[in-house]
Image (cartoon, rainbow, N blue to C red; front, side, top):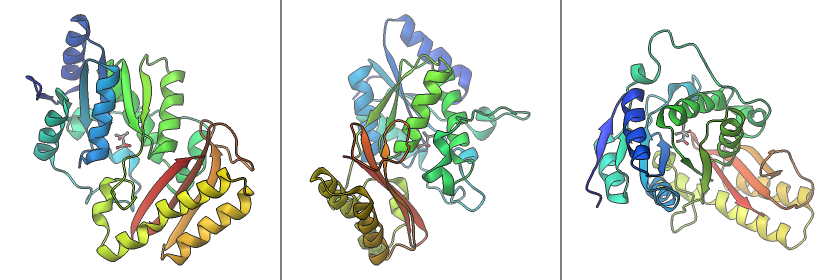
Length: 282
Ligand code: PAF
């Protein structure tokens, strides 16, 4: 267990702590989160420790990335439990700002990446990725992190953050960390706790459909029927809504009609009232 663990709550305190580490010659990583930490988040800390000497994490449930009908109010919050998990994982600094610390009265700026947020999840969550880009640019700017670590489960988010960090010369290298799954194959997500036992069984159709589609595509099957079969499998498993099943270029997120280097299978849908996403390399 690391000797040190501190919680800071203002952007200035975060900058001071990270700059002090950098002056001592340490490379520093930031793992941005919204809390309710599970093994997937702790894998991000482990990934950070591969690329940096010191890992800080942030916990901030960012209202700007929730739509008016989304789960901002019921989003799980457990700062003390999260802090203990982070410390045990080797994280030494937690940035947990209040709403007013992050967005003081008069706050009027936002960061919008053009293009990449328009499709996939962005098509059903208008404004979501502007909220993500805004808060992540603030987190990276205040932290001065050498490395920022984000989960590959949110592949579209990762692509947008990579673009934003490069475009804005933020000086932070963005690292993607692989998807962590439960034993049954479901990708870990803070939102899985909303699923009833029956819904969780239905949700397993998502990783199964992606695995079957990946196998078919890797075996040379044509893209359109494979995607249609995956879509149908989700609907038949009881998904209330299938938002998309697509094969895209992993960087531009544009649809592909044939497998290519860097291709990514992406899917999203709603089980009960819980929206789930998942993806796989092809
Ligand atoms: O992936 C998340 O948990 C959030 O979107 C992030 C990157 C912490 C920004 O609020």
